[in-house]
Image 1 (cartoon, one colour):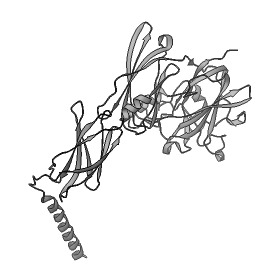
Image 2 (image 1 turned 30 degrees about the vertical axis):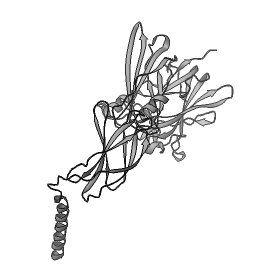
Image 3 (image 1 turned 45 degrees about the vertical axis):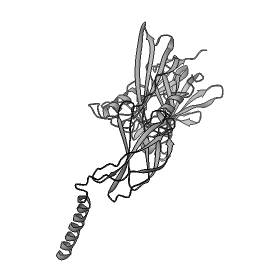
Image 4 (image 1 turned 30 degrees about the horizontal axis):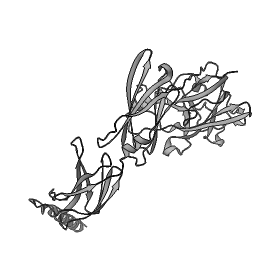
Length: 421
């Protein structure tokens, strides 16, 4: 057995020496490889795809493409010698540009450049800017855009308004690579005459940015937070319009905590918990969907909702805890009770977005602020007058909103206006 082990070690050593020799051959090599021969190119959005023939150098390592933008920044794109094409992005418009392609060997020698004139399609950041829509909402406005290429962009929102006699100019910045996205500018309660002037700029990761695009003067809608002092909750399994009230008193949770105006901060355990018995309170009936119904105590027209999740992130309140994770509700549907039809009327379904890559403290700030949604997200308006509101928890956050693990909820706050008689 010992002889076999020695033999294997000797073979491994010999193979490693040969591998080293393969690279040692290039020591002292200062001869550049031959040029790349470009056969054709295909215009891309803000770039081009080059098809080429490689030189016959045996130590060829890769192909590089290079261009310099208007800010004198150099951008390089590389492709292995195993493939015969290379994509280049970052061209700012649809003008003609020169891209240099190089063959590079293992010693780092670059060939003479092969210059190619290309005319790209309209780049992604400009396409996003052109299709962006700005709409007024309740004490806020929002932006919708399509980014079909899913490229990384930054959206700068420059907005101006009068606040108690003072003119204010602010800028908000959003980063995104989603195919479709919606972002809100909130907390504009003190805007005089409910009018905001908005301009937007869109930037890509290559330093290209649009000129400011004027979106005009946006008119905001008015609502207010509905007081919770008169709210009441049915008992678990009480039926309203054929729908049973959920069970929320599992483990540390209590259903009443959802309307007490206090959010869970990790040290107060202020949330409801279905303990996987949400539908009716009977374990055999399963968890989701479950329904939480609120008697508002009077008639209101509803405009938006803010939900706060269970945190349970520790006493220091700087850990993400369970925000945007398992046990919290990630998707829900809303209803109001219509006296005229004597039944529940569906309002809309909302999926709470999760922004990836934030720090724990940023998740805590977002979680504590709560997640706001309009009753009618694509056409902000009030519901018909109602005394009853129904929150139907559909899915948790886990596995891209596919699991029935949404057991907890900390707080519900509703906005709207008092209904006229």
